[in-house]
Image (cartoon, rainbow, N blue to C red; front, side, top):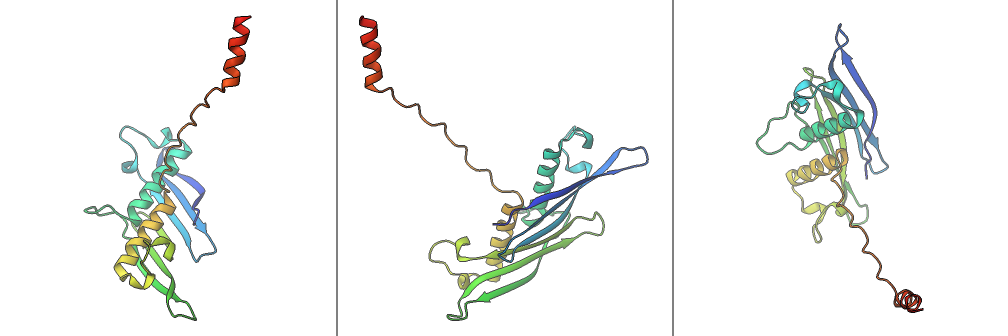
Length: 186
C-alpha cells in the first residue's frame, strides 16, 4: 500500500494579498517500488460554485487537490484533462526460478509548463491486483496501464470505506427480567 501524504499547502497571493491559486504537494514512498511526487495547482475554476479560496479550510483544499490529481491520473472517459499523464516506463520483474512475471512496475508522468501541475507516480502491479486465475503474464500492456492508473488513483484518493453498522443491542438476559419481576412482586 502506498500512503500519499500532503507535506505542504501554499497560497499564491497577488500584490493586493488576494489568493490567486493554491499549490498542494502530494508525496509517498514504500518498499514495493512505488512512489508519488505531485504538485497540484488549484485554480478558481476548480472551486465549488460560489466558493472563494479563502473560504476553504485545509481539509477541503486537500480533498479538491486529490480529486484533481485523480482526474489527471485516471481521467473519466470522454474528458480531456488539463494535464496529460502518460506511461513513462513499464518494467517486468521476473522470478529467477520460473521466469514468470512477479511484478510489473509502471511509471506515470505528466508535467504542464503552462500551469505547473506535475505528476510522477510509480505503481507496482502484483497478482494481488488481479482476479483469481489471472497471471501478470496474461495482461496486455494496455490492461496493465488501466490497472496501474486505477491503483494509482485509489492511492491518491482512497475509496471511502463502507459505513459500519452500529452493533445491535444485546437482548436482555432472562435473569435480569426475573429480578425485575421479583422486585416488582414484593
